[in-house]
Length: 178
Image (tube, rainbow, N blue to C red):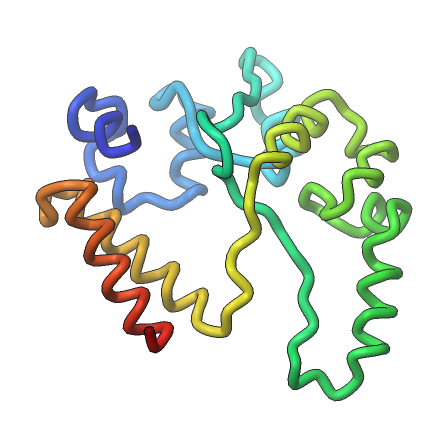
């Protein structure tokens, strides 16, 4: 789907594979792209800078897509009880509403402002089908490899999505020691 949007239907600006989220936000605000990926973190900016644009959110098609956030206590933590106490405190609806700039990790926090705004509610409803990234010390490295391989498909360096998936699986398994 993503590769076809860029390569077959040509709905992305030339060189889009090299752009980051800030670029896409500017393109969206200036009318150079009709849609962009984003989450709760872009709502305040869009409300401020795109007040004259009729914009909305739509969930990514399908199930088990998206990206969630999770808190974890490593096995090597010197004081897991204190870490758990902190997570319990930080994830109360009141604290999440006051101190977080992204959608809270706890659905009950959306009963409090600003998360009870209809735009945030749409994002939270879409998050029901999202998954958190794997809790693995090598996840950042694995994710970077996956992005590189996806970029190769978008630029034509890799012939197909299936080939890229095979390469990502092989490299990911090697990184994980499988």
